[in-house]
Length: 174
Length: 107
Image 1 (tube, rainbow over the protein chains, first blue to last red):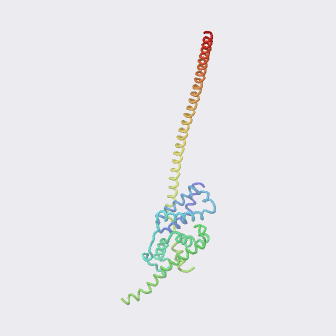
Image 2 (tube, chains in turn cyan, purple):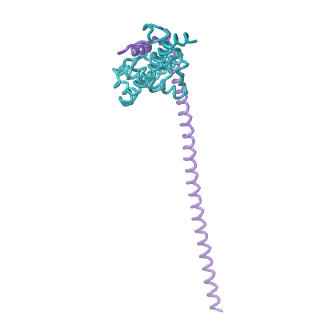
Image 3 (cartoon, each protein chain N blue to C red):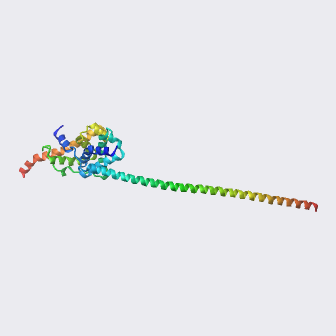
């Protein structure tokens, strides 16, 4: 692979790699660093991949594993307690930036494996089998992570709704 | 797909990296190449030094072996000479002894 070909691969897939890292960390600087390292890894050791049909799969796999490794190495896990998160207005319009920000922070606070599953499922639109292959885990485990993580996120949203409903009653009683 | 999943999908939508992302990656590949060239140079220098050291050691060993062989030969020659001298002395002693025995017989 020539340098020009590598450059075109970077330009073509930079959004994919950066998005996975950014959605995983919810930290743009760290996402950029990790995304650059993935492309450097491609340049240094896996140039044959870039010209083949497995390029996207390789980039997804390398990025998500590097994200997981980064968290494990640096104990970077951002354990955000659910109560400390900004409340998520689930009934808000789809483009509500508060809703998006709240969900992103909440996803970034998940443990590595469920977080990786959520990012690949909802960010990359991959099915459970593809995610299983990428993360080298059984499909059943993928489903389990998906269901538990989604349930946890939904619980937070539901709690918020309930608190919103109770608010007028509490205000009246006080 | 329900509304909540749509929200998740929207939160995790594709994002574009900073405009200079590709330029930064390419700059880092250049740095890597420079480092790699330097490391190859150091490797070549190290290999050359190792070759010179091992060559010198080999030559020294060869010289030592030649020296040992020469010493061994000299020792063998010296032993041969000493052996022949000893034999001469032994022969003379035997001759003297025989003469003495003969003289005692005459007396």
